[in-house]
Image 1 (tube, rainbow, N blue to C red):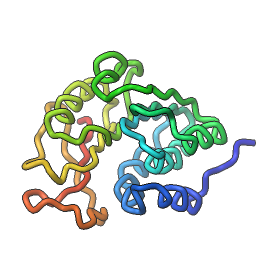
Image 2 (image 1 turned 30 degrees about the vertical axis):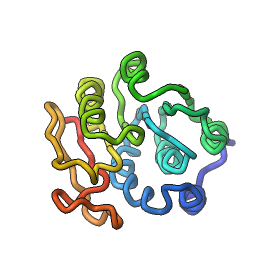
Image 3 (image 1 turned 30 degrees about the horizontal axis):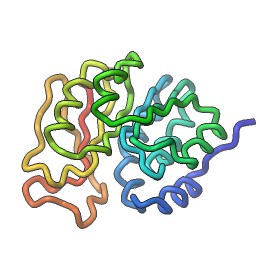
Image 4 (image 1 turned 180 degrees about the vertical axis):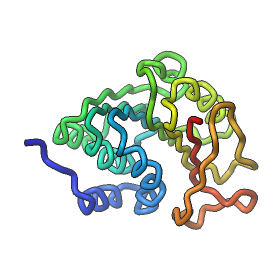
Length: 188
């Protein structure tokens, strides 16, 4: 029998990471919605120590058919490796820069359900990646981008609608212009 990652264990593991408890609050709203899907391929670009990946894995374990792809310039953290094995979730880690993955491998899955961009936080890079990812997203799929607090504005993207969740802890990182630390776009 596959062990279950409990909510309490997910919180404990993610809070040990350098993302601290903010990441649980930020990723929960879209992942709660998407965990009701029958099939949910998920991608995280910039997984660092694995704290945000644990939150994603908690919700992926509730989906009947799922797989998880991670991308970072470092090796896959042991925390991710341990939990994808325990949960039996198929996983592929690409050790490469964000730009290389986006150019060579981003369309390795037909129809991403959830994408979390948390590597290069510049508006130019993330906007270019969102434009590339938009046609590859499943209808209703979600792209979340962390650390948008330095962006002067939050852009609109063809085929995507921006989603704002109430009650998301934006921490002390909010930008005066748009008040967001993390932003979400859904495939229309």
